[in-house]
Amino acid sequence: MATATEFALGTVRVALTPRERFAEFLKTRGKRVTRQRQAIVDHVASRHEHFDAEQLLADLRGTPAGAGASRPTVYRTLAEMVDAGLLRKMVLDGRAIYEHDYGYPQHDHLYCTGCRRLIEFSSAEVAEIRDAVAARHRFRAESHRLIVTGLCLECRSSRSRSRLQDRV
Image (cartoon, rainbow, N blue to C red):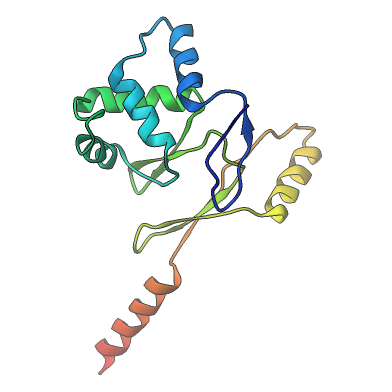
């Protein structure tokens, strides 16, 4: 069994590497495994950070393997990776943000609307509430997605400083 890279929230054991899982997904759809698709999967799977398609495209252009990946190929491959269960897509402030999700445990996010930073967290209490609500409705929960929006400490602090300056 392959193991995902170790991250702050831990890992989940998976049967296939991201590359193997994606190749299997593409084959079931009658699509080819191209060098560009492999470069995209390898790049995304090698790190766990939040990104958008344009950031990925810029990162790939700086690598020999991904230099030939076109914008349409990147966008199409990201959609396929979401469908394959390798990526999670979140739309925040009208912008599609992705994160490598395969082999990574269930977690949620805090989203700062000031600096646009995503903070990951895992909470047993959130899972307990999810399970209690599901049980009440005779529903079997498999996963959930929670994004709490607000302002981080740094943005709150800078806003309060600017308000004080406005009063002087």
